[in-house]
Amino acid sequence: MFALNLRRLLGVAASVNVNLDYDTPLALIGQGLRSTVIGSNAATIDVGDIEPLPPRVAAAAIIHELAEQIQLQTTLSGVANRNQAFATAHRTALGHEAGISEGVRDEANQFSSPPPHGGRWEWRVPYRHPGSPGVLGLHMILDGFRLRTASEVRHQDMDAFISAARSAGLVPGVQHEQRAEIPAAVRAALEPQGIFRALRR
Image (cartoon, rainbow, N blue to C red; front, side, top):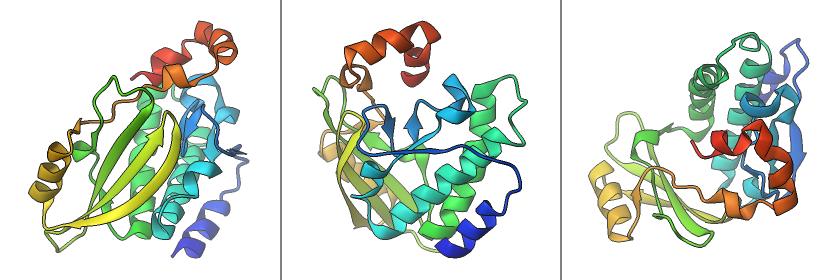
């Protein structure tokens, strides 16, 4: 499925720019200094964050980011409201991702460590599988925007996933503290462009 989806995405005629980096503090997998913030050539996939993911999730993450950027840099490039453009591209990318992960990412039920957490935090993402009440939870440990470990844990249902997350002291949503993770010189250069206002969404 990965190869098939990748061939379909690479068959897009238009040129699409995606940067590859390793263990950068400026992106989490593909989230961070997106094209929605500083231009179409700013999209970055952090290979260092892909590396710890389970193989199926890693493949889905790559497909997601490529599908998202193809939308943002082609059919949605002329949309003035870049937040709206990203939301549309993200929904499309989730569909591509589901074809690889064999489950639907339930972003409404994500949990993470509550701030302040000093840079080290946990992030849990549930995946629903059609026709089954079971939930596959992706459990990740991060340092700022750097993904360190990732594992999959099966839960009987969404209630069990939520209960386990709350018992671990996690709270709903994704609570980033990436500002302190970014070097001061880089932050000073980017702050006038409003990048950190976008990152802190």
